[in-house]
Amino acid sequence: MSYTSFDNIGLVKVLAFFQTHDSEYLSGQDLSDVLKISRVAVWKHIKKIQKLGYKIESKQKLGYRLISNTEKLLPWEITQNLKTKIIGKRVYYFEEIDSTQNFAQKIASDKKENGTIIIAQKQTSGRGRLDRKWTSPKGGIWCSLIIHPKFDVSSSTLVPIAAAVALSKSIERSLGIKTTVKWPNDITMNGKKVAGMLVDASFQAAMIEYMILGIGINFDIDTKKVEKKISNTPNFYGIDSLRKKRDKTPPKFLLKEFLVQFEKILSQLNKGEKSKIVKEWTKRAEGIGKKITINTSNGRISGISKGIDNEGALKLKTNKELMRIFVGDIVLN
Image (cartoon, rainbow, N blue to C red; front, side):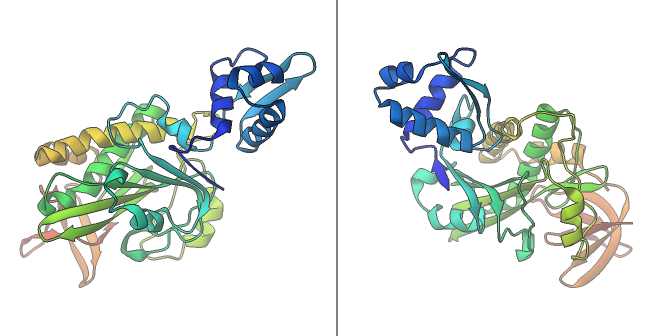
């Protein structure tokens, strides 16, 4: 099952009417008259709405009433009152897909897809950096964001850094949780991973045709079940889940806040304000000033972390030199 933000589907009209009259009972006849559809159509839409996770109460002689909204990241839940200009205005939603990143690559070159987000409730073949497998069960936020940047190739390496800052800010604003950023693109909490991202891109000469930011957030997942699957994978250092049992914050609050924060930081990149982004990242970073070891394609390298430069490269002070590293995995000592 899939939906988009630009489909003009009847159930959204019915749902919108419920949401604007959420404390009232609405009869099937009322809905039929106002929306100019048959009572049978009203009933069918209500059944579909319930299957999408909305709770609708039904009482004889009174009618129907919306009790609670869904937790699914459906397109109309994302676009409603979203305070961005471009980012997140077009949404594709899939109950299940192989990979949101794969779907994004099929449509990314289309100019109208600038700012589009693809969301999946579950991925069957999710992937992380360096084509590593990413486990994507229900309860997480799995999405890909397409951008057609104004900046040139030299700034592209800062995109995952900027996204990490935006996500860390968003987690704090929406959930009240302070997180740290781990180079190159992880978000951590209590020393464990709660989110990660990757970037795919298409370049034409010195110009960027498009970039696709893939984002995986452990919002409310069964960490023990996931750890059993991935604990033996390279560079595993533990995972955590953001939302705890007592917290009822819907996932859409976090995702919408991220879209807002990412658009703001993307504007800074477009203006060439790289140092501001690096400064924000540094404030949230773990491991700076400490001895670290990095797994690279050329083997392990150890030294003191000196943060990152304006191109997103990690600065590592070894016994011999100050190195700049663009690709690798940090192992905290």
